[in-house]
Length: 261
Image 1 (cartoon, rainbow, N blue to C red):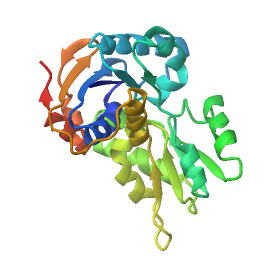
Image 2 (spheres, rainbow, N blue to C red; image 1 turned 180 degrees about the horizontal axis):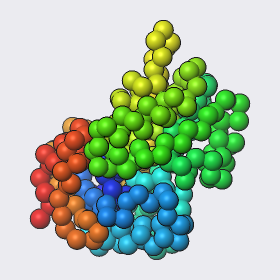
Image 3 (cartoon, rainbow, N blue to C red; image 1 turned 120 degrees about the vertical axis):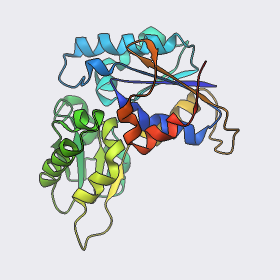
């Protein structure tokens, strides 16, 4: 079994680690183009072209499924990716976890990139799944880029600024960018208010990992033999995990996996 994941940069680590935990026997292909990151400010046409290039590099390794582990690429390029790769390779997009967050009651905040915040796509999800819940959209300029470069000071500053724009009574935060899941606990610490119930964070990594397995008719098996490998593609060329990836627990988990040969 082989699962490919794509993103502009290291935002794919969370979903890749989730697949690894569900199926330690699965081979992983991690395809990104960190030199073009971030994709959020780019035009839809540019994002689509870059996403197709990254996806086609992954498809060259003949995966059983491809996870688009990037909210921006899912918003801008998912139809094009499916048109290019399916039915040979099932394509699984990443959708902000607004539905489960709203199901838990409100108020809810959605942390996302400036390009996604207020977009028709995100507003549509809010209207569809959170019509009866108070939702605050919180733009997080610079946070994804800070996470990508493991810039501790910039991460702290971006998280603090977004937390200051998050209503104090928020009970759940949707992490609307895959990069944010890598600093989830720092976000929790910044938003959690003393004396209030524990804040609930809603990421997408676990859900997209499980959906990819369902698409290929496989189920979770955390006790499967620890035999999976990891192949890393950077702008289509074989590479290794960036040093910044090792800053995060998910990156260290994947770095311990045998490289594909």
